[in-house]
Image 1: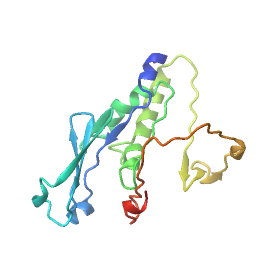
Image 2: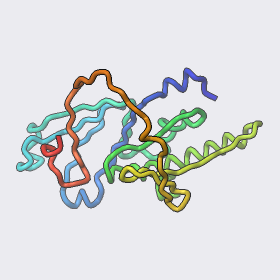
Image 3: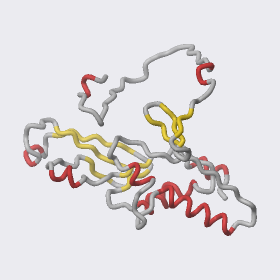
Image 4: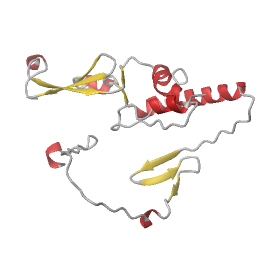
Length: 199
């Protein structure tokens, strides 16, 4: 079992998994603009003039570097992601969630439909029950699957029954002072809106 100090070291880590271009994206001639540099840096190249071809714009781009605790390449398996990012959390209390735009590979990583490459859920369950079978103490395992969709909470183990969070409106939040820290751009990557319209 992990000590409290070991669990705290895992607190708030961000790991990124880069997915390859899909076959449809490749057929359309789309370009992969993200590249891995070292083990924790993901670079995004933004082309300045989209009217010129990819070969002509080798020097016409901006490079943005993003730093994470770890970056997994497109050849990384679910097992590799699990062993590095999730397995250290299995014996403690932790939350592991996938975040990203539609089609980014969240379901493939977390759930997977392949028995040859199980997702993080199945790998964690495997290790939880492996630990339980060797333990001398009684262990109870509780499972719940919820989905938050369009701001609504659904129980996926109860025929997608909708749940309501009670007494939420009764909580009062008081702000003593508010000051701007930075500006932020919100871009809906799933729609056709332009970034300049969504500031």
